[in-house]
Image 1 (spheres, rainbow over the protein chains, first blue to last red):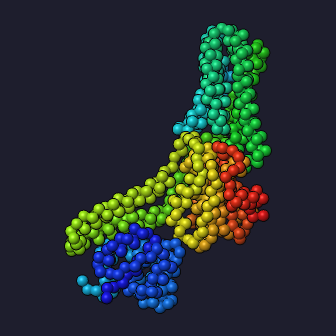
Image 2 (cartoon, rainbow over the protein chains, first blue to last red):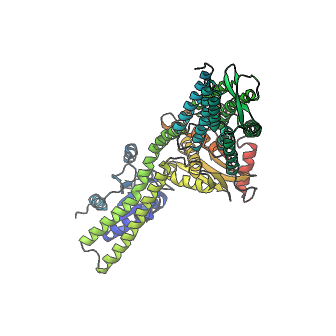
Image 3 (cartoon, rainbow over the protein chains, first blue to last red):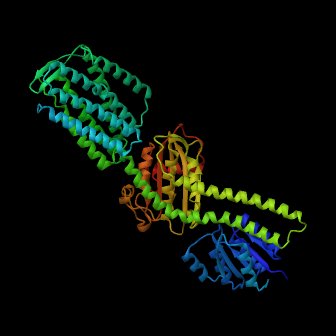
Length: 122
Length: 486
């Protein structure tokens, strides 16, 4: 069973890039433009990993994480954000995320982190 | 040296020093240069008259007094030119004609028909008027007279319109007062008709210099540089705030560029493109995307740097579309706005062209919108309405923040007044008011504690009439007329 990945970001260009890369790497990829849409997919598909942007229209990243953790869904959440802000980082990490990465993170690095988290050895 | 020469020479020196000071404050400002030229005319007049009193030979004295008229003939037109520039009235044709007439009098003043001879009074020699001096007095009084009427008219009009607290009005007040004092120096002509009436004009000029110096120091009259320095200071503080936004915004296109390229190289390296033609097609897609994203990054930088640049392009007013300004500001503040959960609504009317400096209008709107956002904590609604009201263009910027108590309504426009503590420079609204007035407009606010604040910018419109309003705007207009929160 290929690992399932959900990417949530309000930029279609980023979604396309991630989808293109991870699909070729054998992931099943879903994409969503905001937290609300992402949450729907999460409940239905239960992906192992969620790549999450913080700043989005509808629900933003914070709300999404809270909702997921409230429901006790044990998915790995990797936050990828353009903000360089220590207080924001501390706040988000306290909500329970598995990694906090800054854009522009290397997509190869990102792939390695994901593979470690889902236990795929390369 | 005749002691009667001394006061004239001192007044001449003081005037020139003031002129040079004003000139070097802002050498690029036309207004400052005109003022400098005016002080040179005054200097030439007082300097040569001062020298003339000490001359013992009547022929040489007459020659010296004629030299003084190199300056005197230009005093009225220099004055009028300066005042028109200060008031933002452009009459290049009139000014050109008046300068030509002055040049004509300059030539005439060197003939025996202008000054026939000199007469000895108790203070020394003084020139005596000939037949051509009469039309000159007429010309002099006419130009100086219209200049005074213009200033007084503008003062009264400003007073009636309730501009008395306005920055520019305060400047105008001092300017009018000091120039009217200077004009009375023209009673010096009495002694040119054989009457022994001591020419005390230098006293008026000395008062003129003192009063104007006070206005420059106290009301920043003719002092664009200092204003610009204050602006720069404010801008730097604002930029610090916005730099975080720029940093964030630029990372998205970079992420796409970097990620796509890495992904492509990775796939190429492990031979993931099958058939191999796919690699070529993929590379094309990725390069196209890279170009797009790089362009986007450039666009973000351009927006930022166009805001950072600060210069006064002289008096470059053009027809500015207020709605474009609103949209540009909102786009620029996009990041700042999105860090909070603010609802942003715009109701933009049609055909809102105002004669103004575009960058300054954007800066005004920018400062008010930024203030409004900072006033609202985590949530709130920001609405911007642009509309016509008769021959005015109104921009209403409304927030649902905590509001401003009535006793502070005037205070918020004063320099260095801030409620934002460490975040604010206390200059934002002061600069807004200054820039609004520079562009011929007015700014006021209406607010109710606990409900919010609306700032109303009121500019003269390039066109006229009340059309192209939708219901929302009509509502906003009604609210504006009746007082938005009353």
